[in-house]
Amino acid sequence: MRRTAAVVPAALVLAFVLALSGCGNEGTMSGGGSSSGSGSGSMDMQEAAERSDAMLDAVLKAVDPDLQWAHGPTTTRACGVTRRRAVMTVVSADRRQTFLDRAEAFWRDSDYRIKAVNKDEVFPAVYAVTEAGFGVSVSFRGKGQAFLEADSPCVKESKVAPPTAEPNGPAYEGVYPLPRPNVRSDFWS
Image 1 (cartoon, rainbow, N blue to C red):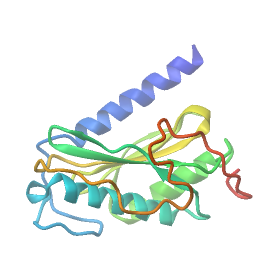
Image 2: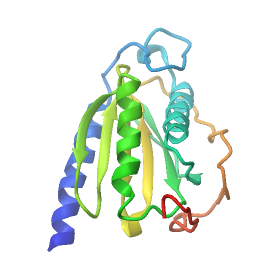
Image 3: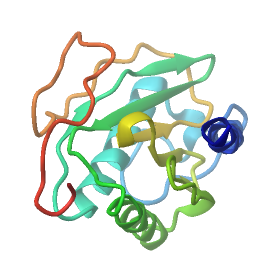
């Protein structure tokens, strides 16, 4: 019962954040990066994917010491795109809040608005949104694996290429689901 109760609030928070990053939310670009237009309304899915990649790169760079990561699947919806990263470093239960705190602090410093924080002991998470309407999150899921996601607001439909950033460990191309965390760290593990 405890496990189910913990998943339901996390699922509700995720649904809430995804709804906020959905279609119809246009804004100006903020927090670095660029696009071909002044707002998300002139951006296409490929540009949104690149912007999402840059946001994920930035938060992973801000979390110190480094964590090994791999690309998760990219998904598209009617008018948006989601990029994902899976953390392959084992993050102990004692260090999960430190990871979330560092991501949250980076987003606050980058003028992202924190939408929700899930303080659950098993599945903690933090959700933020940019002024331009991109939703970003870090969440811990099964076996304590951390996942990062960036969801675009509504953008013009286009083809979306795979991410170009090289993971700082194995790429796991064509492997789904990704393996559980398998890299030990003196600090994180």
